[in-house]
Image (spheres, rainbow, N blue to C red):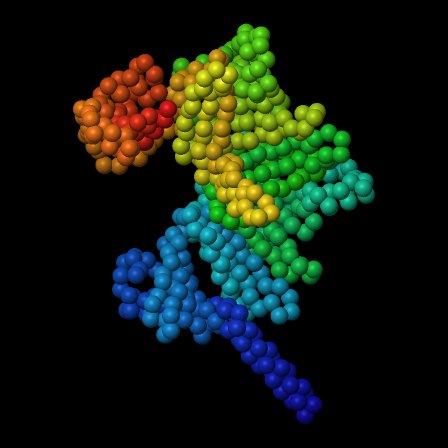
Length: 566
């Protein structure tokens, strides 16, 4: 009995020391502790009565430095609210609000082994860098936080007619060679796995998924998983030698602005590829994954992304030229020059539509090709739901990239006429919220690297003799603007708001030219011109204001601004 008492006291002392050490480490490494949410809300309403909305409730509350610090994080019914004390005595306080409907992605990471005392939360939101919060692993239930975000973050449902997806992994009975396994391991090539098995683990062993959530496709690469459910993409990243530290990253389908799939090439190229494009700042602007070509169904993944990213079904636009049975008649030296410059020409969109519903199955069942163009080897498609570019790569052209971007993800567009003499191409510019390369400043040893637009601006070149530029502009206006679905706000009088200014003379003309001053021009004349001679406006669009400075004009409508440059 005495020995048992001594051992019990030693265990209690050791446990008390371990707890004290944990509290000390939490204070040093700024790990947050859970505090009473009701008390936190009452204190906030008493000190700052206008900080919370009248119907807003604090659901979860945390305090940093092991509960001894001055900064706090509140998860309310409407937002994440972060209190950051500034200066000596913390008299100055910053409050950062992140509404749940602005969250583009979120992740939690479990604690590792040994002295790793903290688990982590990461949040990516619209127009703001990543927010990170460290929690004490002994005080905070990480999966409770994940389920809280599951409930409060907005997940979009399938908005159009989805296609059936074959979730059966291909060639499971076929064994792979040792050399093939080594190549796939080095290249981090994923293989398709049973979605039901993955779903069960993510609802029991790791309670990440919602109760009604279904896993549609799943892929495994080493210890990591890429899981595609009916509401999100879930990336499971197992870290460290022991594998105790695991990150669970959720990306709702609404955060995907574009995607591309790429087939395997010739000879030793054995992997297919997926690229997801988002508008998030930081490392998640692009997400790439390679797949074993024989162990992953690329076209099933393509169908899944179409179901969740492309959106509502849309009827074909009337009056669009399909170029059915079209034969390109341009030849001679000019045909050779434009062919060498890879300028695209219209081709039969009906034939393209028939082919790409089956071989390969790129299009959705409810989707139709409206316009099709072909360059030297590449193809551009305008469908009822998206822009598709088909890019043949490599010497043999066996590796093909299929890039897709829904029409509702474009934020601006423009057209540019061909120049003088040997300029044979007209151009379409499509602007997006995707990332661009900002460039690098130079130094004594290397020149500066200029910025590149990358996917933030997609430039399409068309043969000026084969494509009607204004018809193309009118098509893009109808397809991208979708004027019937715009939220117009308060009604306004659609009468012209400016009048033509008299032509300046003498010094006034000189000063206006030197200062690039805008002068008013008659919007009524422009409205007639844009609706008749160069038909680029929709029937119910009206020019409200128009200004001109030198060779630049600005035309203002109720729903957009049109810039004209010479």
